[in-house]
Length: 442
Image (cartoon, helix red, strand yellow):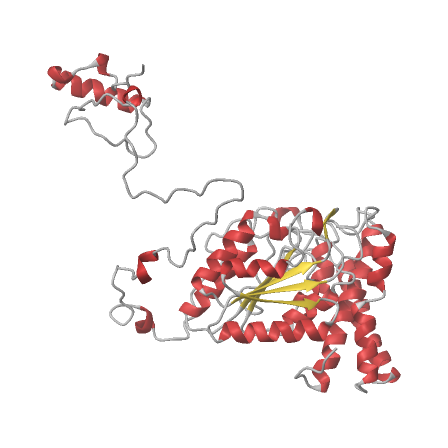
């Protein structure tokens, strides 16, 4: 671990949030086994440094969208443990008033958190849009989200990254390579060793870091955030880590070799950071005990609050399902609108294409040993199709529309009636009983 540009209190903050993340999830597991959790519990054991280190690099004005193993990012953004407890227990006092039993909640007004989307990869284009909107409004924000190694194989991952790259969006993507996509190891789903290498295909910068080193994650994320804020985004960071539990509490992860768990257990992110803080004299045993005691007090109080909170009353079941004037959504302009409206922002509707996309710099193809050299490419036009495949030209009546309106196929009743009316008005144009000509086959 290296010494980052963080104050003494900020260094202790990182420990507080990582330990709070772990202790909170341990209690969620207990509540799940007591049948007090309505939804699922998706442990981030062994990955706490990823959520904490990356989200800590953001500023309050910045936006993030967590996934199921990013509870730590929610804590950094200002959510309290009671929000997590009540949400998973579907209590009326939860952020969604008991309408969800897992992590699908956010805060668009104060904390700038977009709710998770269960379809893996979909948050990438969404957060790209958030980043672009912030730039347009002059907010100078950066947007961030996470994706797993399995989610990086989805189509929307590639579409979203290509979109972000083409738009140069101030967007940071953290790829959590935790070795397993449910029960599929990384090597069985991608042909490359490092997922960060995919960034080159989009023409964007990337970095690969030790995901169990919270300081390394923070430094890489802070650099990426600063680059994006300066207009040099987007940025992709691959963090190498390990999911130390199954996909969820129902999954015992028996498909993971025991030796692999043992290997990564020796690289536990919290234990490593505790040793670093001690070595660099940022705390002593008393200070550590003080922070740990604070965490237990906070968790005791918030768990008690959650367990004593009521379930949602049935009469509110249909409330908040759709937005029907329940709140206003207005753009928060941080720049003069004249900067992005004509005439100041006028652009001619003509694109300039450098050298017209000409193919240059190609070397002649080398002949394959034992084969004759390939003939040079001919500039002659391609030969015409054989006569037996030529279509018989049929001149359609001029008063019959050549295009069918959207949603009306040639067999649509309205099209048939229209053809009959035309035929009645112009008998000399009738042909084949009002049906369109068919291509002549041989």
